[in-house]
Length: 298
Image (cartoon, rainbow, N blue to C red; front, top):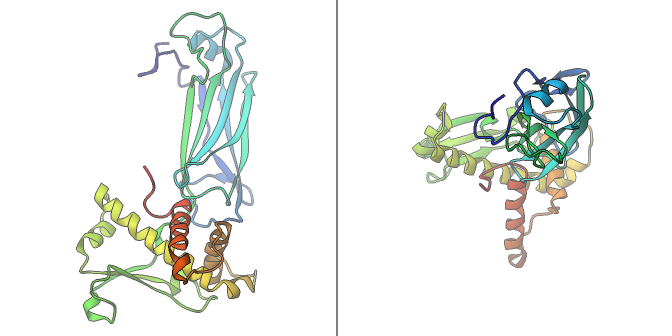
């Protein structure tokens, strides 16, 4: 087989390596979706993928010597933190299905994950044909799945309002309406108001396909709202920790998730002293970004 695309070496034909979709275990195995709306630091998710490799065909397609060990590796990279972690790894020793299985932990995972499965050969000695993939790390086949594990600001109930007709500062772009009832449904008690006078932001929210500038506006909005939610959670710390039976998707359950993330980042209280305020705000900004909210480093 000819070298694929820009790759300087031969790769297996598509039917030689077949990746099945990722699945997750949630009272049974189901397809791993593109997004999980319920996710917090206590979440542990088991995921699995089956890969079929015709090893004889793989050796023939690539020119690798028969018997060359092949290896499947699955890992994830977080868009929020840039962290990378191994999910599972397995040697391919025969033409039989290989099951890769591992776990995603809420304390390490945030934002969008790029889950990549790669088939690579072990280092090969004594082969000098330039098109044979003998270099360490040469990827023979690859499968990618993007998983978003935290909902963003666009999932808030949102209303566009002319702030001039309200008591809200007319120059503000947004305001988050909240409730003190921690037992109330989160999406019923919180409402994100957008000032209709901020026409650029309104167009960005309503756009079906946001431009780069609009994506930046939305990211800034998301980061600002997430920052407020973290602060609200820390302010309600005593009440949120007084119970561990908050109903899923209630205000208490959602804010407790934000509180756990804040405390894991070293934020246990809101600094009001002028000598501590700057350091606190920097740590809060770091927390927001590390959890996958707001504008990320490119």
